[in-house]
Image 1 (cartoon, rainbow, N blue to C red):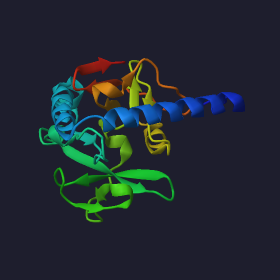
Image 2: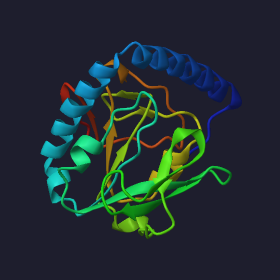
Image 3: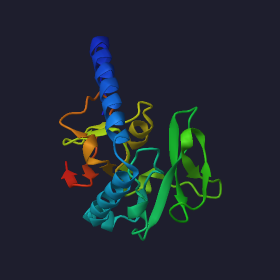
Image 4: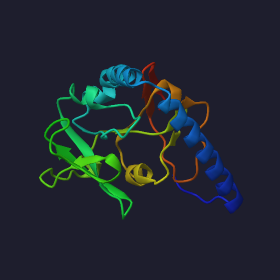
Length: 198
């Protein structure tokens, strides 16, 4: 998705995104560790039940940052290749690398993120069947609000992979403010179930 918007609309969108990010961070912070763990388990059960997940041979997940649903519950039920992003913070880019198993072959990186170590081979993004993306908020049209750095928007642009947003119920809103270049999800999965956008 690309296009041009006048400067005043971008400022308005930035303000709306900033307000929603603050609201969502507070909502997730209000969840207890038990609620986050149980919610992650229920959401991942829905994820693993998707036909698109069952048909996938290569999936890209994420190593959860503080407050994010843990996709490890679904990873342990997957029989194909699991990739995690290897992040280049300075360049603002990430590349998928295959890991030998959930939590294996990882090294600590910036901002509390675990990334695949050098022995984990990079994977051609065009071979990935399904990408599970985190986000601070999602809506029922597949809109996604990230943390503002644009890593996933840049990565998803041009990919054929199915895009799945994984979140807690509290992170789903009526409408996420979006700009040209913000990539949408094909479905959104939460502890309550699946919102199929496509």
